[in-house]
Image (cartoon, rainbow over all chains, first blue to last red; front, side):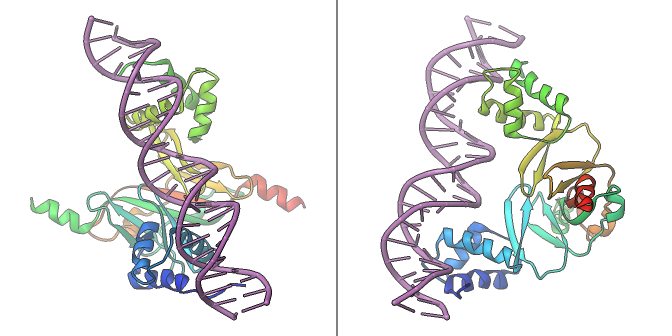
Length: 128
Length: 128
DNA sequence: GTGTATGCAAAGCTTTTGCATAGGT
DNA sequence: ACCTATGCAAAAGCTTTGCATACAC
């Protein structure tokens, strides 16, 4: 049976507080400000639990590695700015599933990552 | 200056021979059948060189990790079959870039991974 | 002959796991 | 009181790096 622990509460709290995709070391660091003893292994174990229970979802960032975000958010894409290195969440789903899936294939889900320069970085570049 | 070596020749040969996305351990194993002494570190160093020179491209598979494929191939998506675990290359690009990119953002590239069941696995499942 | 690329081994990361024990129920 | 979840430390991938030497030029 799944027990309620202050550690898992803290980990979930981190996501509620930050409301953006997070890396494991960020979760650990922020979580420790809530529960001092919080351990790396505990974070990994709870992330796995939370993904399995459907509370979290993993994102696979080509450069930054694995990120986690709340699963309740609607399906969306991610945009990585190569200038400021931030990750943005893009609303909507612009993939034509029928066109992208060959006959006979069943697509159950997809992950999209875009790369480029975000609007604020472009504005800065234009000024120079 | 970049010297020609039998090791890099072999690594490139592996891609020409297999003509599909490959993992590092596959490249090492197949490459060793061509150059017995081929070393892991050499593979990693040459993969980096070949990516930088534009001969190879990396794919970031959410489960299998990093894969490499020849860069000369046209832009395409990847499909991972959760039943047989194979990775398929899907022709074409069905993403509406304008729709998926917010105003002010410059999208320079994107990576798409689809998950589901491939046609042959579906056929097998249907028979049962 | 000169200097880069290789092989080998060690080290760095990220993630997982074994084990004793604290703590939720 | 029971037994799961935690903390700690070690281990297990994957990738990078330092160093002596082989070999491409």
